[in-house]
Image 1 (cartoon, rainbow, N blue to C red):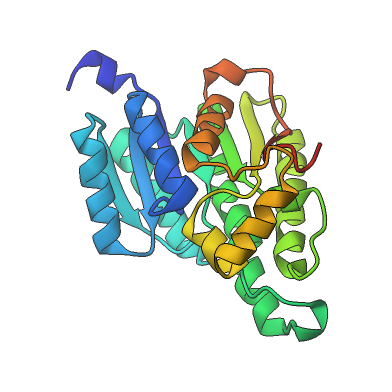
Image 2: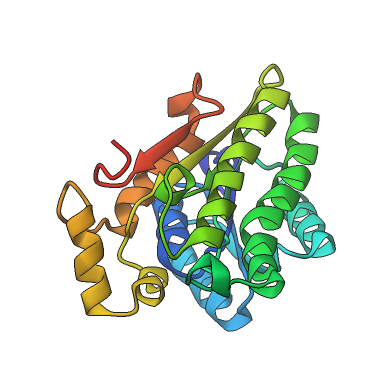
Length: 252
């Protein structure tokens, strides 16, 4: 292992097996980071880790469910055991939940969304901060959404969960603002992903969504990944407690 590799930042990405998370892991790998990628599918995770190593990154996959605190604790501890530290974490694991009007929502649909989108972020930050506070340095990026800033008929529970992510991000950032740790969010608009396909229900829904975007196009995962890498790294050292929109102008 070369000295440059040894000194490369250590980055953890949850929800890394598809969409924005996968693009983010690839972007960090191209920048030379040492990577732990996580998700719930071992086969897909091992394949992603191999792809990252083919790009020259020191990378491994660790299976974890962000809804389970013991698994999150183990994920962070294994990252530190392998690399000795944790410089940046991207909390991307999320779900669109069950779209539909408020009157059709249940305690179960609420829990299914909030347990991943909100509890998962809370538990991830808790254990990432445990390590970063001991180091006296670190950066966390939570993946929010344009719907963390505005409302959307038919998506109330998802919207509420992303508003919660925004609140967690700002509050946690204030708690550690003097410690050398930065916490921010990146808030994508409609991005070409499998989640968008499920959320819109097909081509007609995507066409309608595209018309709502001032830029009149959907975003791409690489565009979001570039913003995450910028916010996470030493290029944004005076940025904390912020939510950066990557949404084609939806929230302008």
